[in-house]
Length: 228
Image (tube, rainbow, N blue to C red; front, side):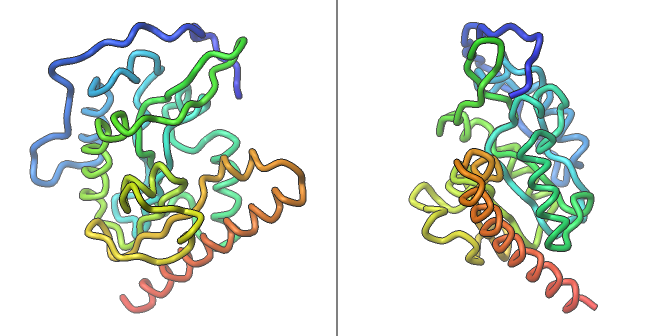
């Protein structure tokens, strides 16, 4: 994890009676949503984060990728998927013929959740309550984009979109219907590949991830072909 000059002692948690929520406008722009989300205090995570990390990508994107929570690098940069996991994600996207600039990338939770470890801030999995507090922003992003395909990267995103009983290990790479998009596909989070011990097993995990994204790329190209 990247070192930071932020204090390694989380600030006291606070309860907020009037959290910011997405605009009630019928068709808010992503920029308007991003601006509103920058002031969100719907859960306590904002207090120990540098900033809100909103999604990024074109409004016209046919594909929305959803991760778990920003990491240390994302928290400092204010952009999703820019750390080591994001670099791996970009590499595999390119290998399957997808352009990072043409897809929308976001997270289930918009503030970095961490715990101190020496001079580093280590990622922590968000709770169900924290994911629920952030859910209105995710729903608003999806509504603004109206994607053809949603790709859930990891269990937190998959269970947020497909239900708490969904298991990535059982149905990864399988196109599924959803009320949020015609197709939803779940796969692992690229960070899990980086954590895989041993070069051989790490390579196998990367290849399995690439196969899942190849399905996404095929479905996206097939959709584009039918539109012509």
